[in-house]
Length: 387
Image (cartoon, rainbow, N blue to C red; front, top):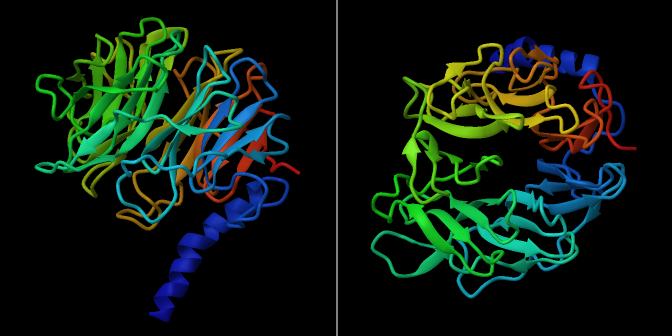
């Protein structure tokens, strides 16, 4: 057994560590230090839509962070997130966060999801309050409600319209909508609404900014759904031959041509392989992007130059699950609207999310798992940790 372990370290881990030494970011690696004064396990990075100095980050365990100097320093912004509603969320002994969004019309308004609960801020993340009344789910045959929200997305032009999606098995759920900025919610689609066409796992949700009635949603097993009436009715629009065993990780629309949709899947069983697909006709037909290994979990077009696109892909499997793969996450860049892609060679730090500076297409932020936020100022050629 010891010999097997030694061989495993030599054959699998040593090449990975060697590549890390060659391309390690400059600066101090935060590791798992809970006292590190910056986000560590980063699943969302959200730049302010108008002020390039302001950036928000979501740490999966530690919550909301805000920077007012382009990510050089960070401040925790969790005031009010410890309050609980009368109806409790789905039982958990751990604190965790799944979503953070900034309202693009009124950027002082933010939403986050903590422990299946929706919280809202109206003062640029200084304070938060529970804002999920009406998003309750029910176990089949039971009358006791609970919360199971995983996703929140804001309308591109209407400040008061917000959507939310559940991820829950064995219970009612689906798509919820608020028309008063999250004060109250109504379920508009889901497994307990006949004819709505979608189940109780709805994440992520993406709205077409050119036509907000057109929406896309991911889910377990059915991969991707499309709605043309603002989320009330959905139809599956999966790529041919892709079904069962896959989960949608990322959906992104080309901001210059929203008919183009990028979608990344992740395996839900050892029989499947993660993939990335492109549709050029609003999800009617799809082709696989074979230049990208695995499925995209985060993709961002540069706001100042949308022909430049960055994507993080996740390989078919975790390094120690099903089929070991040292290229677990990879950063790609495209300079032609996503037609062709370049592997930038970052395969060691577990990348989770990417964001692009408002005015500088070569300045990108990468959120990592237990590596904090690293930045590149040359389009992903080199990276550094904040000093």
